Length: 196
Picture 1 (cartoon, rainbow, N blue to C red):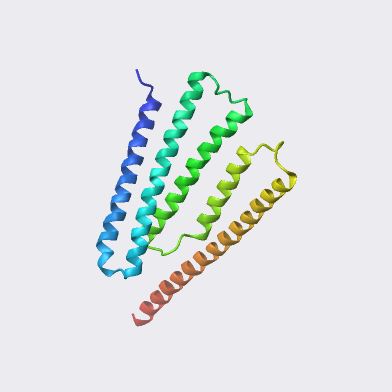
Picture 2 (spheres, one colour):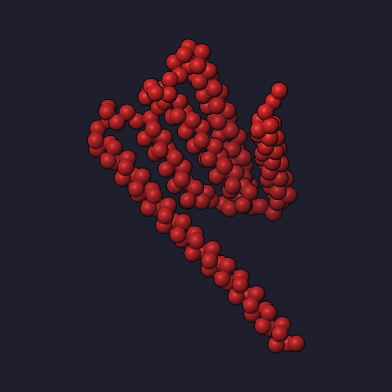
């Protein structure tokens, strides 16, 4: 007999998967509808983005198969001991690799959905931070030169500062846009009241 939590989790998983398939189908449909209005270079960008998305999806699937195979073989042999540092590093390094590839693919799909022509800087910075976090997880601090650790730490601090600056600028831009929209609505309301 199945526990209630497992059934709900399975239903949620199916909804998420069907939502992702629907979103992908909607994205492809929007591209197809807008194809005739796109310039030659915009068409080129769309094709490259779709090909990259497919290739990254293949990399994610291959990484997942490798990860599952590695974990199952470690379980069968009895070597999956979370207390053993090298096993922990290897498994979580592979998990982070899959997460980085998924985030990268998500950012490319976001370009398709939004219709922007460039990947957002904040997303690239977050992917770089994920890659550095992965590096820190798989790093054996006893075998690495201190200058390498200092360099990696400086890179994390620099990326964190840039992310903070970009996020702050995005927030200011959103406030300026929402303020302009509110100002337009306010002027329209006063204009209608004056004419009445």
